[in-house]
Image 1: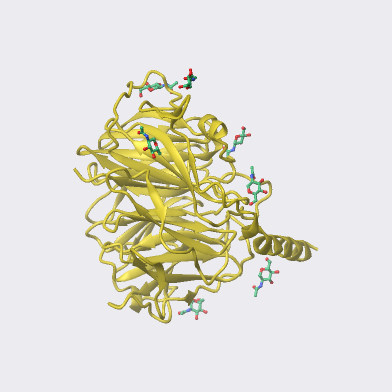
Image 2: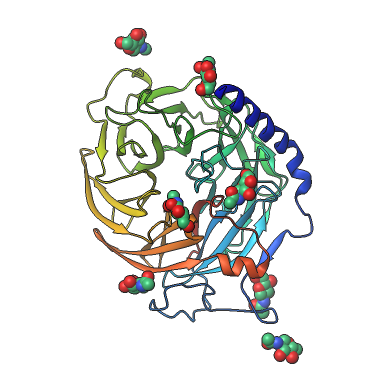
Length: 445
Ligand SMILES: *[C@@H]1O[C@H](CO)[C@@H](O)[C@H](O)[C@H]1NC(C)=O
Ligand SMILES: *[C@@H]1O[C@H](CO)[C@@H](O)[C@H](O)[C@H]1NC(C)=O
Ligand SMILES: *[C@@H]1O[C@H](CO)[C@@H](O)[C@H](O)[C@H]1NC(C)=O
Ligand SMILES: *[C@@H]1O[C@H](CO)[C@@H](O)[C@H](O)[C@H]1NC(C)=O
Ligand SMILES: *[C@@H]1O[C@H](CO)[C@@H](O)[C@H](O)[C@H]1NC(C)=O
Ligand SMILES: *[C@@H]1O[C@H](CO)[C@@H](O)[C@H](O)[C@H]1NC(C)=O
Ligand SMILES: *[C@@H]1O[C@H](CO)[C@@H](O)[C@H](O)[C@H]1NC(C)=O
């Protein structure tokens, strides 16, 4: 019975995948949200819900924050201007020329892709890539580095050669983009970033993961999560959630100088106590990653000798760490200024700050309660005028929380910026259950 229902569901969703792209309206490629009255552009924040936070009359754009609407009738990248004080103004939404899709959950909730990194900016290449989970494509945009809310599609959206793409990563130079497909056909696949032609497939990068999944994916347990490069670009790492009975793992491929990937991946099981590796952040200078773990809090995983380990071997440095009272810690971002990691929990709407020492020993430094039930998800750090700010998508409140990372253990809220009203006025469809991703770009000084 159950499997018949899942099969029916996947067939239904499958046919929707084929029908959906024709529904994308060609007429609205860009939806402007930063207009006052008769189209005069507003320079002040258009949607600040916290009126006590500092007043922003700054015309300068210091950077931009981006996430996707992931709507089934048309996927858009929402671009918000970041001002000098870290505050946001939603400026526009630009069509990806693809469609979104929601993974299978009962009931439907926020975090539609069970992923981190649905959209990712490359500072080095001044480009942005976004997944189209319902089209099985990846879209590349150029970023205007003087006015980074101004993004334009380069080339055509490219087939990901898998199903339900959910996460994308760039190497340091921004010359290679790799996508993680989390559906029935689950794999990674990489593209050369061509600034004129767009994404160009790279030979020998389509690598199956072989998880037993559906399209769209059923989750969050046992689904794919996030793809990143290691700090030195020598490895591509995908995180796969498990469940308490079958712990999840990291899949680690070697990346050759021509961008190709090793045929097989090294499988690193979640450390004892861990089960659902989710969002990852590299631990700089340590050849290690911090992976959030929705089953316990987070995992610290050492990548040294990864190819000589087998999935059963435990590395003495690998450890799962409990975040007390956690419900589902799933996303991670690192601050260069404080040196710490900022993990978000969709269930408690708390940000947990973690420090990791030279011996990979992790300590919880502080916790910051965000708006109750806002369901804090993907997050990213931007350095504005030598100070780090944390941008946290709060999909259930259709808003973004901004925290000023003043010092280790000392983050303060700058404000919450609500998209719903400006999106409604501009005619952009946004749903709490479908918003995904968070990435930032900073204008060079
Ligand atoms: C819009 O522009 C027209 C013509 O310039 C002006 O008469 C009108 O007052 C403006 N409306 C608002 C709301 O500013
Ligand atoms: C207003 O914003 C739009 C798009 O954001 C831009 O094309 C236009 O040049 C801006 N106009 C002014 C007067 O700044
Ligand atoms: C989200 O997307 C799904 C399809 O992927 C769609 O059916 C639904 O209307 C959207 N909105 C919400 C709130 O789920
Ligand atoms: C895959 O998952 C489905 C649904 O849980 C299950 O019925 C099926 O036996 C699994 N297939 C394999 C090969 O494990
Ligand atoms: C892992 O452990 C299981 C159970 O102890 C064993 O059957 C299996 O062969 C081991 N796998 C490897 C790759 O060592
Ligand atoms: C989202 O908000 C609704 C109320 O609007 C609440 O019932 C639900 O629990 C929230 N979901 C999450 C994951 O916080
Ligand atoms: C607004 O921001 C200030 C400064 O961070 C904070 O103290 C206050 O609690 C916030 N108020 C609301 C309603 O979020």
